[in-house]
Amino acid sequence: MAISNAIANFSMTVHPELLAKAKALEPKLYERTVLPQRIVSIAPDGTVSTIQDLPDGQIQAGPYTRRDKVSLDFGEHMVGYLSLTVESTGSPMDAPCFLQFRFGERPLELVEDPDDYDGEISRSWIQEERIHLDRLPATLELPRRFAFRYLEITVLDTSAKYQAILKDISVRTVTSADMSLVPPLHTQDPLLQRLDQVSLATMRDCMQSVFEDGPKRDQRLWLADLRLQALTGYTCVHSTDLAKRCLYLFAALTQNEGRVGACLFHNSDQVDDTALFDYSLFFVSALLDYWQASGDRETLEELFPTAQRQIELSLKDLDARGIVRDKDTWWCFLDWGEGLNKQAGAQAILLFALKQAKEMAEILGKADLAKEWADTIERLTAASLTHLWDAEQGFFVSGAQRQVSWASQVWFVLAGVFDKDDNARLLKRLQKADPSPEMVTPYMNHYYIQALLDSGLKDDALAHLKHYWGAMLDAGADTFWEIFDPEDPTASPYGSQLINSYCHAWSGTPSYFIRNYFSD
Ligand code: RAM
Image (cartoon, rainbow, N blue to C red; front, side):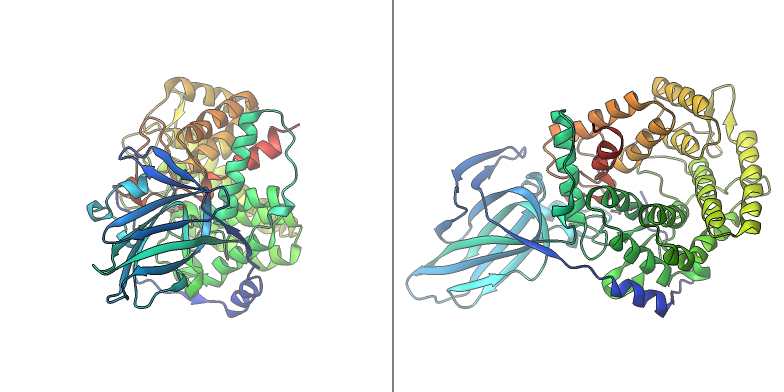
């Protein structure tokens, strides 16, 4: 699957005043020290067994020489910096000590050989490090930040004359989430309690200097991920400043014609050259969410023109019928489902965002614009019903092949083209028909649950939340994953599960649902 869509003649426009506001909101990072809990062995199928418990977190491993290794379990997913002390024993040290570190969010990352990886995105995301220590004893903190629970340290070599001893191993974790603000959860349901804990850990570990999509990979700000993570952040840690910073970054660093990029690199003040139709529009949604969570009118006013521009640019993509033009590039995301056609989903997201943009125009007293958009909504709704609604099948169809997918139906429900009861009937038909492509990301499953809730199908929403995210718990999740197909737990959009992210912002929304809809 192609995963890049660089726009032609890409250029970036920097808006210094907006960038300055984003930078002023650089968050404080909270730190903890986490010690290893046990020495483990990991079988080729990823099964972990205890070799030795480390009740006080203290370890003295070795003496080790060529190819000796130790694997550690820290008992929880963390994002942070590894420290250790290495000492020598035996004869005087006559050669450097050569160490290798491998980090795993899941055990399987320590089992698969990175040399076998030949996927589409860079191998450099696989978390490993090799260092030479010329003098021992040495105490060091590895300079790179890693996301992991499991750690394997291999002594690649010492010499025939001396051996290495590893001790004082610890991790300095970082997050910008103030977890002391998480309100108590009121539910007796143990599964919901567990889903909430894992969801909170996911949110915590993705909340860094920005809302990262994944702290293992890509460690950057993607718009659709930002929207969902911000919703969870508002609910769980009353955090609005980080979302504000991210919105300012997107508005400050725009692509050609004022388009908001699909993602950006906050460390280098650089928007990526990838444009995704739906992601640009989620700037509108994320801004309205922010306003609803914060009541910050100044920001709404300042960033509204950026939102307005995303609507204008998207409307240019309509054909004469009032339907978003389909393309055969990676022009719109929706989900990672193989063969998923994006046209109907894109049309629905445009309607969804237009309604939110109209709401903001009304809040800001821009009556003419609100009226113009109301007319556009009417026109696009009519076009959707004429050209994309297949009354015989009772489903929206997408693309030249008239594909019926989960994503298209879910997004048309969220776009509110039908009333609540008709939407509920559509979702019931969808469950029964179970068309392919199915939903494969927690991201798309989030929107399915929201669609069920908006249609009054609260029991179905709860059942699906427990079923889908619960299955990830059963598969051993400490934090929720970027992609999860219960039918194919090894699925990866990138050609190898080794490169998948197992702590992913867009997957951490169970806490949002549980705390807003399913607690006492
Ligand atoms: C993945 C990212 C991110 C998502 C994009 C479309 O590479 O991790 O989560 O928004 O794809």
